[in-house]
Image (tube, rainbow, N blue to C red; front, side, top):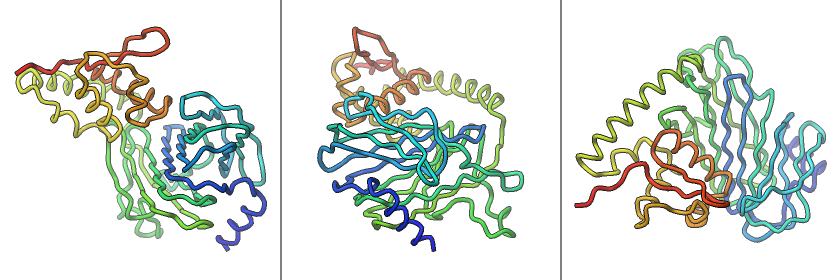
Length: 298
């Protein structure tokens, strides 16, 4: 029945299929403490396209779509059937980023909460990555608490659980998902600490951690001690800055060399700056980025 439903989706919304192959689709979902989920969907096509679209089961708001140079695209957003269709035409892009906020995807399961969504594969794609980030202070529920109701802490069960030191997240990677298939993703979590309490604790621990790092770098002059606590994209930015001979680097160069979209890099830069790891200086129409510490000469 589920397969029939998605076949009907193809018939109802033929524009969802695309002649081009999607080389890579990254879907990052950040769940807020109020139950809303903030989505970032990045799509890399194998060639330039004149149109792109994305369908969401449910209501969404704060929709923005960006091209590969960070330019915002003019798109239509409207209810169609059982969800919302974001449709962009008359473009010339190879990389597209969608950002929006979704409602009603988190529901209570006793004292816990469950995020669940089914992703229909409506285009031929080579790589799909889905990441669901829990709210601050939330933890994945113990599977023993779900033994009597037949649910799993997260599905698919082979997902990778990790943390960037602030939030816990689950990540799944799919290679060549079958066209017309449906990928069901869910995570059940409990709120361990309220966001206000957590922020106080995180701020205090962050200060202690940065003091420790500062002392450690002066003594050992090594970056290896900080990289493990960063997520993959943050490590790439830090390693790139370390490799530069100049003290400051143009933010546009970082985006170009690492293949990051402008919105994605801006979020990474903001996080690193807030944690005191880099310094950002506005110069004209761009930013100049440098490490908040210097490598000691041997």
